[in-house]
Amino acid sequence: MIKLTNRLKYIYDLIDEKYIVADIGSDHGYLPLALLMDKKIKEVILTDVNKMPLNSLKENIKKYKFDKDIKIQTRLGNGLEVFEDNEVDIFIIAGMGGILIKDIINKSIDISKSSKKIILQPMNNVDVLRNYLVNNNFNIGSEKIVKEKDKLYQIILIDNTKDVDNNLIQANILSDVLGYKMIIDDDYLLFLDKQKGKYKKILNSINDNKGDKVLNKIEFINKLLDEINRREYDSKRYL
Ligand SMILES: C[S@@+](CC[C@H](N)C(=O)[O-])C[C@H]1O[C@@H](n2cnc3c(N)ncnc32)[C@H](O)[C@@H]1O
Image (cartoon, rainbow, N blue to C red; front, side, top):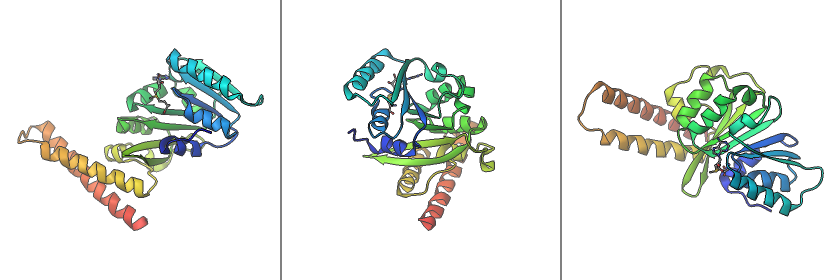
């Protein structure tokens, strides 16, 4: 049995049974292997752009001796370029930078949209990724902050089975940073608090240079801090 960390366990729980799942950039493959071992899914495609992780995954698959009715494929290649339209129900793209994830989706936008769901877990530049998703009519179903040790991860679930939520039709830079459909819980409050600390620190470090660029930055941070306060207040009332 594979014990998943909080980040991967949250993604594991998002997977609906009996779907064909593809894990992009599988590397160690803990998540798809756990899904297979627990018989949660019957068909998985593991991919990576590098040969090394894929070879060790193949060894692991042999070692575990899965049932004959379980289908496992491995594919070497870049992002979603190794798929065709409608081949996969759920794509998982986790543990990569937000800009890389954006580029992977953008290169294969039709394949992305032909799936039922896409689960994204960017390690950074989450605002850039969200801005891209909203501007390209991807329907954000939910977003969750997951705490693991002292780190907070952001997980975005794209639900292609439903129409784009009207509230998401226009991207706005505050929600690009703080999320559009965040699940409100203690981890989210912690995230808001950390964001507040981060942006206050940036504000304090800005010196007297009052050029247009700096003034715009100050204005943006002040708006962001107001929005964080508003969200904190609303979330605390909700919890
Ligand atoms: C840090 S690991 C993440 C492993 C796992 N997905 C997770 O979340 O724990 C990133 C993996 O993505 C792979 N990778 C990077 N760029 C990729 C691309 N364009 N297409 C497919 N895989 C890629 C890397 O080779 C590496 O194995």
